[in-house]
Image (tube, rainbow, N blue to C red; front, side, top):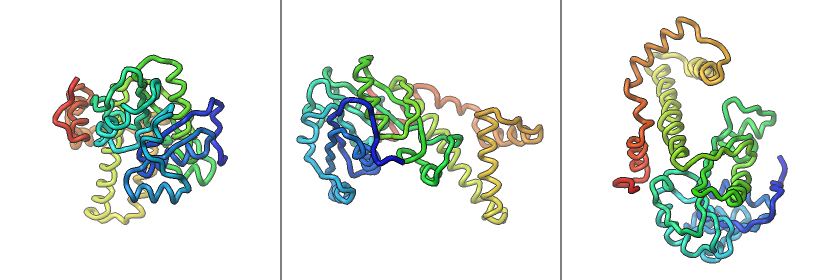
Amino acid sequence: MSDVIHTNSPSLTIAVIGAGGKMGMRVSNNLARTDHSVFYSEASPAGQERVRAAGREITETETAIQDADVVILAVPDVVLGKVSESVVPQLKSGAIVLTLDPAAAYANLLLKRDDVEYAVAHPCHPSVFVERHTPEEYADTFGGIAAKQDVVAALESEDEAKRQIAETVIRVIYAPVVDVHWVTVKQLAYLEPTLVETVACMVGDLLREALHETVHTVGVPEAAARAMLLGHTQVALANTLKGDNPFSDACLIAMDYGRESIVKDDWKKIFSDDQLDLVITRMLHLDGITR
């Protein structure tokens, strides 16, 4: 993998707020490999130590953001509103505020200015079907290091020039990126959390629990149970999401039994607006969402 990320675009001034957190470190690692002018701000002593250990300088937030074209708020969702209240008033006109998760934007927690653009971008993470060639690509399950991934993003206005600037930064922080898919903030919220956290991550954890029961309740040797589960998980995803092979008639009967035993009949209610509001209020510890 190259040590430098080439963007083929004019150099930008970028500020990363929360540069020492998990996502802050990830995006900073890639930004540091570009020719953009990047400033790293971090409030916590532990986070500051991580930034310095990576060979990067800490800049006070006020200084980092004063000339920034793009300000990345790489802080937890629960504090995004408070952080935006201190950051947004100080930004230059025309700056872009980029958040890394749609929940706060959907809940209208960000301080708004008419002359500031707002964007959200969330990584898809490398697909289970992505083509991998190197040990680094196989090891990169999260993305942003070596394995290719897509990104879904939202821009609150229809300003094409701002979209291009945002996409330039998005393609860097999540590199290597195949495609950036542009949607609305609400659509992105239905993807994350509803589709991928409420459903996909929950199913993944259910698989972990099922493996535990198979080993510790039924008594199947763990190596055998894990090998069977991991192989069949890939087959199940390939058959259902890619249409690679049909399930056998017996498997279809077992799948119906699984739905009857595990899945509630009304589970699709999670794709309604009131349930989206409900899960986001829970995630952000809010009393409700104001429109």
